[in-house]
Every structure is written in C-alpha cells, then in structure tokens.
Amino acid sequence: MAIHQISVFLENRAGQLAEITALLAKNNIDLRAINIAETSDYGVLRLIASHEPEACRVLRENGFIFSASEVVAVGVPDEPGGLSRLLQLLAERQIDVQYMYSIFGQPNAMAYMILRVADPAEVSSLLHTNGMQLAGAAELGIVSSDQERQE
Image (cartoon, rainbow, N blue to C red; front, top):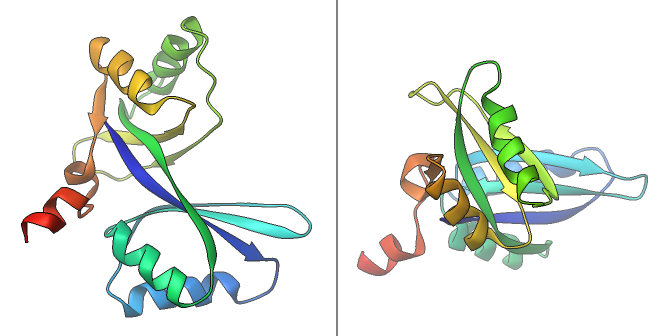
C-alpha cells in the first residue's frame, strides 16, 4: 500500500520554506509529514499532503519544481525496538531503504515510518505478510485519488 510524497526543490534562502507552507495553507492543504534535506546549493522538501493532487496543482501554478513518488507508510509500535524489528526484516531481504522519516503523535500509539524503497509494492506485500501495520491515506488523513473521483 503506497502513498504519494511530494519532493520540492528549494533555493537555500531565508523565507523559502515559509512561502511554501503559507501557500499550501492558503489553499487549505494540511501537511501530514514534512522532512527537509539540504546541500550547500539547494534543499529538498519532502512532504505528505492531505490532498496530493491539489498540492501539486498549487506548486505547479506557482512555479515550484517538484516530483511525486510512491513511498510506503508503516506503523511501528512506539516502543524500544519497534523500528529495529522493521529494519531487521528489510535487511534480511536485502531491501535498501533509500531514506526514511517518521510521523509521531498518532492517536493509536503507533509511530508511522515513511520509507522510500525501489519497489513499494514488493515492500508493502512483505510487510503485510509479516504482520506489520501498513498505513494508507485514511490512517494518515489524506484525501486519496479514489476518494476524489467518488466526490
């Protein structure tokens, strides 16, 4: 079960992050997860938006360079060793985690890990088969493309 992440390429300048978050807020788009990585020349803002198609539209119309990719969201118990069990399972199958970030503070005592892997479908199947709790759009408060088509 994959969800969509948006990666926005940013200039390294003061106010750039505030500009994007204000723009999304103005369009009633909530951020479910956010992560930023930077180099000396630019930054990459990774985000999970409450409404990915609308977020992409807003970014495109305002001239931001971005891409959307599939990531896997998996719940791990918010306890010592919860993350380690997940990573051990992936390591045993030689699955490389390209990057990872977390969403804490969920009401069900789970911490959701967002994983970027080469084959999200394969990893989702593996995690499901091994009793891991996958998180989809509903669990993360995201309007999915399927919901949008039904409205």
